[in-house]
Image 1 (cartoon, rainbow, N blue to C red):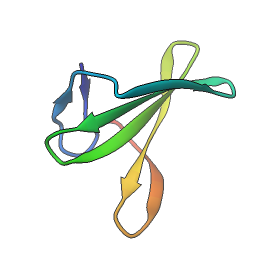
Image 2: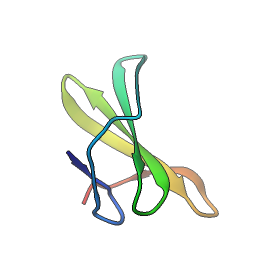
Image 3: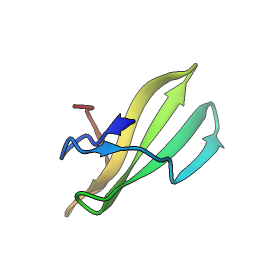
Image 4: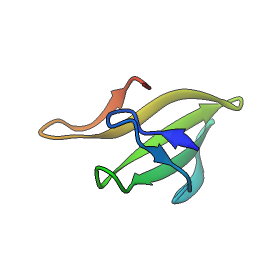
Length: 64
Protein backbone atom coordinates (compact mmCIF):
# COMPACT_ATOMS: atom_id res chain seq x y z
CA UNK A 1 0.00 0.00 0.00
CA UNK A 2 1.09 3.53 -0.79
CA UNK A 3 0.08 6.73 1.02
CA UNK A 4 -1.24 9.65 -1.01
CA UNK A 5 1.13 12.65 -0.71
CA UNK A 6 -1.56 15.24 0.14
CA UNK A 7 -4.52 13.56 1.83
CA UNK A 8 -2.60 10.65 3.40
CA UNK A 9 -5.13 8.04 2.25
CA UNK A 10 -3.78 4.58 1.53
CA UNK A 11 -4.01 3.48 -2.10
CA UNK A 12 -3.87 -0.29 -2.57
CA UNK A 13 -3.81 -0.92 -6.32
CA UNK A 14 -1.61 0.39 -9.10
CA UNK A 15 -3.81 1.68 -11.92
CA UNK A 16 -1.05 1.71 -14.55
CA UNK A 17 2.63 0.81 -14.78
CA UNK A 18 5.24 1.56 -17.49
CA UNK A 19 8.88 2.33 -18.21
CA UNK A 20 9.88 5.89 -19.10
CA UNK A 21 13.55 6.24 -20.01
CA UNK A 22 15.59 5.18 -16.96
CA UNK A 23 12.53 5.24 -14.66
CA UNK A 24 9.84 2.70 -13.85
CA UNK A 25 6.58 4.61 -13.32
CA UNK A 26 3.59 3.58 -11.22
CA UNK A 27 0.34 5.54 -11.37
CA UNK A 28 -2.15 5.41 -8.52
CA UNK A 29 -5.72 6.76 -8.40
CA UNK A 30 -6.88 8.01 -4.99
CA UNK A 31 -10.51 7.24 -4.20
CA UNK A 32 -10.48 9.66 -1.26
CA UNK A 33 -9.61 12.91 -3.10
CA UNK A 34 -10.42 11.69 -6.65
CA UNK A 35 -7.05 12.51 -8.20
CA UNK A 36 -3.97 10.62 -9.34
CA UNK A 37 -0.25 10.63 -8.62
CA UNK A 38 2.76 8.93 -10.19
CA UNK A 39 5.82 7.53 -8.47
CA UNK A 40 9.03 7.41 -10.49
CA UNK A 41 11.38 4.62 -9.43
CA UNK A 42 15.10 4.45 -10.20
CA UNK A 43 17.02 1.36 -9.10
CA UNK A 44 13.98 0.12 -7.10
CA UNK A 45 13.70 3.31 -4.99
CA UNK A 46 11.22 6.17 -5.35
CA UNK A 47 13.13 9.06 -6.92
CA UNK A 48 10.24 11.56 -7.10
CA UNK A 49 6.44 11.89 -7.20
CA UNK A 50 4.36 13.89 -9.69
CA UNK A 51 0.73 14.87 -9.29
CA UNK A 52 -1.65 17.55 -10.60
CA UNK A 53 -1.74 20.79 -8.59
CA UNK A 54 -4.75 23.04 -9.12
CA UNK A 55 -3.82 26.06 -11.24
CA UNK A 56 -0.20 24.91 -11.72
CA UNK A 57 -0.37 21.77 -13.89
CA UNK A 58 1.62 18.66 -12.99
CA UNK A 59 4.26 19.32 -10.32
CA UNK A 60 6.85 17.44 -8.31
CA UNK A 61 5.69 16.94 -4.72
CA UNK A 62 7.32 15.67 -1.57
CA UNK A 63 6.08 12.41 -0.10
CA UNK A 64 4.29 12.57 3.24
